[in-house]
Amino acid sequence: MATENKFVRALGITAIWLVTVLVALVFGTQGWSKFFSNSFWAMAFEHWGYPVWFRLLIGVAECAVAVLILVPRLAAYGASLAMAIMLGGIVTKVRAGDARQIKAEMVWIVMAGIVLVVRRRAARRTLPK
Image 1 (cartoon, rainbow, N blue to C red):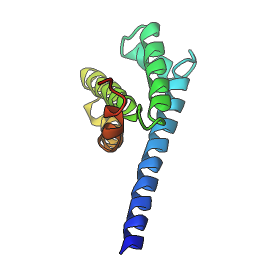
Image 2 (image 1 turned 135 degrees about the horizontal axis):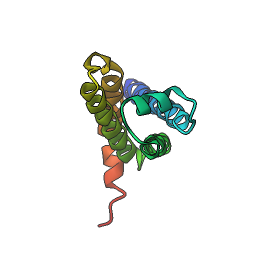
Image 3 (image 1 turned 90 degrees about the vertical axis):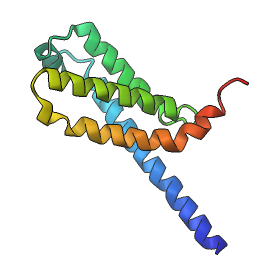
């Protein structure tokens, strides 16, 4: 019985780390790509009417997500930031008439939400008493 509990616990830990690393990789690479003026994102942000500084700000925020989410005590904050960024992406696409294109944002909201729920206890331990 104890062996089963250890196996289930190890499986859970592995699963949350897989989700966490996947979110970090995606946000890190997508954030980094926003720093280049010849990227898809440069054209997309221009199409949506956003200034260059805003694209760079989102790039910095996404790179911050990639770092924060890998630190268990900070992962809930990184996941919350990821969810906020993706909600902004949904609003942008709906305003631009691309509401059918929000599936990717929804996937990343769910993935970040999983990390947020699992890591929220570790985040509470960092708060000053």
